[in-house]
Length: 280
Image 1 (cartoon, rainbow, N blue to C red):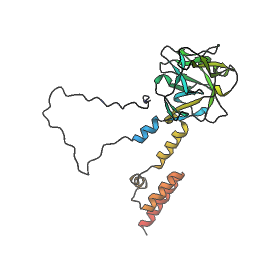
Image 2 (image 1 turned 135 degrees about the horizontal axis):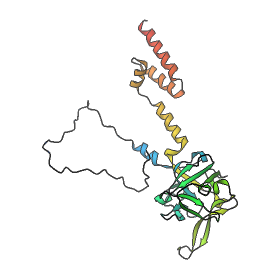
Image 3 (image 1 turned 90 degrees about the horizontal axis):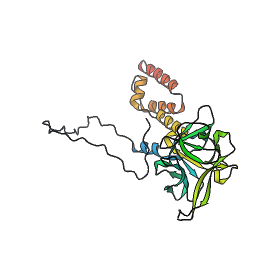
Image 4 (image 1 turned 90 degrees about the vertical axis):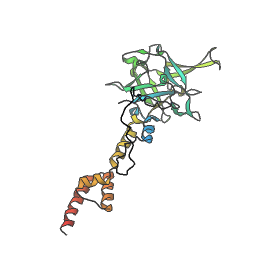
């Protein structure tokens, strides 16, 4: 189940409690303080925080799920889209000391859902309004298409700068890349504005972008979590597998074997030793 996106500064929503329309005659059950009562399961705050944290994609194979495409601009901006499909550069507020490598979204318009286009090397990026990021033959980006064609497909090319990429438009059929251009504007307080284009013919610093993604979708982090989950096993579970009580040395030995990958062999050996001990 996909969790809804949350941003820094959002207050957690408390579940609404339904008030009883009529008074009840039964007194409320008092919680027991005895040590024998089972405790209610609690959720891990660390796990939730880790799942919703944002990290940088290191390779094209990492890219999946909600992402933010950080542009090489000053101040740092990212590709965003409004409800009408207009694509623009949105200034990023969630940064640590202005470092673009720590960028996190603060607006749902900045978030795109990245998906590999089946049978190709390209990726599609779906906006918050259900439309796909695209770039026409004139290099003008938009997000108004409800289907994926070559214009809605982007090939992610690793850059010479570690952790950064260039996005080739047209599904790789065109020698053009997404880029940023600074143009003069009387509406902006600084007198200039950052424009997103898709007509750069050469790779340069202006075509170099970072892709930030949620940690729970990164394959390496997922594999690390699965490995840690396999390592965790209680003494009770080990005793149920072996079929008898275990001493401290046997518990440590089986836990080490679980980490190293020879768990089943050690279980058989411990079982055999236990049988010999009974008839010793």
